[in-house]
Amino acid sequence: MKLYSTNNPNHIVDLEEAVFKGLPSDNGLYMPTEIPTLPKTFFENIEKYSNQEIAFEVCKALFNGYISDENIKIIIEKSVTFESPAVLVENNIYSLELYHGPTLAFKDFGARFMAQLMAFFLNKRESNINILVATSGDTGGAVANGFHKTKGINITILYPSGKVSSVQEKQLTTLGENITALEIDGTFDDCQKLVKTAFLDAELTEKLNLSSANSINIARLIPQSFYYYFTYAQLKKLGKPLVFSVPSGNFGNICAGMIAHKMGLPIHHFVASVNANDTFVKFLQSGNYNPKPSVETLSNAMDVGNPSNFVRINELFHKNLGEIKNHVTGYTFNDTETRDSIREIYDRTGYMMDPHGAVGYLGLMKYLKSEKDDLIGVFLHTAHPAKFIDTYDSDLKPKVEIPKALEHLDNLEKVSIKMKNDFNELKKYLLN
Ligand SMILES: *Cc1c(COP(=O)(O)O)cnc(C)c1O
Image (cartoon, rainbow, N blue to C red; front, top):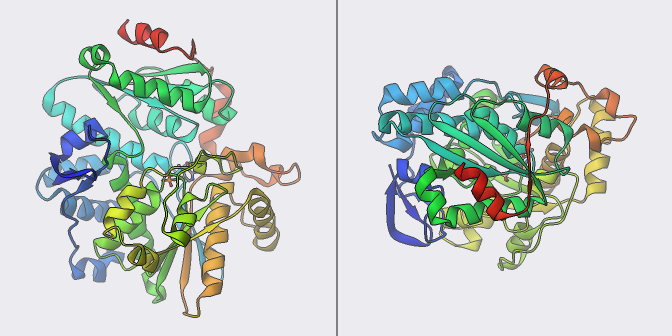
């Protein structure tokens, strides 16, 4: 498997380099030079495969001999460890629950797979690395959990003090061992800037073997394509075309679905469902991509004004707006619509959604209304409602089921290192 930089097709690296560098030095994004197609017989028999077997076939085709079958199996056995059921909510509408992992958000898929892939490469090299990651909430917990106790990898998470939910903070600060949480007196943007500055610091990168766990890492993208296949395997028997609506922020999740589609997975259409951060929707309307500062919404993991995977989507469709529009439709929804839909669907069906899933649901319904064909709609339900319980009205709060994965957090003590928003302080800490 080879990857190129979207800024320079001649800049080609192998998977190991792409995974540890995260980003090419020319500031592009890594993309596979070839996206293979899976054989027809695979799709004809897919319902007979287990999820791990499906993930294996996808990796085997993509890696193309770069990692042995035996090692791919080990990586998958350790990372694809929880279910992602497509649950019927109402007639022809399914919720793809991606929140049954340890931190109750779909980012567990990417973080766990990346941890195992890195551990595999490091085992070969017998060296240690230090990963720095800035988080606004969900990523930090998933990365901490995915990499916890992984040999040879130390994780330092920077999070903005007082600006993550109490559940998220517990998930970041209670694991210990190879995980350290730095509580920064600043915003998420400050944390991200500190991390970026660290990567540009020659002394730090040289002495610490720094690496990133950023969402644009190809090792996080690949496993996010798996559950599109799992869903197809589950719903194929219905015999109708599938539409996937993806609540999107950085557009990594939907981009992974588009890669699955390129590999032959029958997907009728994608819906990019966004909150008030509507840069991509505006692009579909006008053909102009104008990033803007993010605005805060209820579905805060999607508060992204400049979706980093836009370039990858543009590459997949040969930078052709018409081609993009043939595959994906975009809709934007405000917080009132999101809140109302959570209540409406609960009152009508008894099914509880989180604010991100609700945006996905709204986009799906809007698209299906505009279509005459008989279709099956699936919205990606990216986080468990309990993770965002603070945002629910007081009468709805008690209806949210609290999963076991959260109960034990109550008894754990937060451990963080408080730090000013000051690069020199961070550097001094890291070097010690
Ligand atoms: C990260 C996240 C998203 C957005 O996913 P992208 O890949 O950035 O588009 C949606 N929902 C939840 C709960 C998330 O944590």
